[in-house]
Length: 56
Image (cartoon, rainbow, N blue to C red):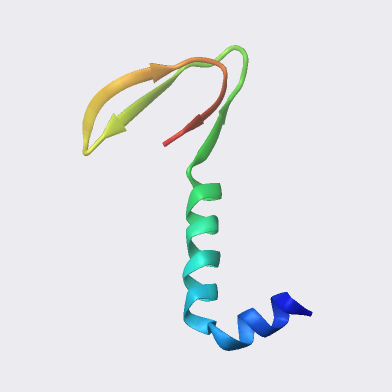
């Protein structure tokens, strides 16, 4: 019940929190075992990422 009261009292905070979580989940990438990925920062080469999870 506390969660519903908080959401009703702070709708903008809830929208920002949901957007931040969605942005974070969207930045996770998965590379297969036989692949390597190139990671760019601001359009320039930053590093290569090996197999597994990494954040972009």
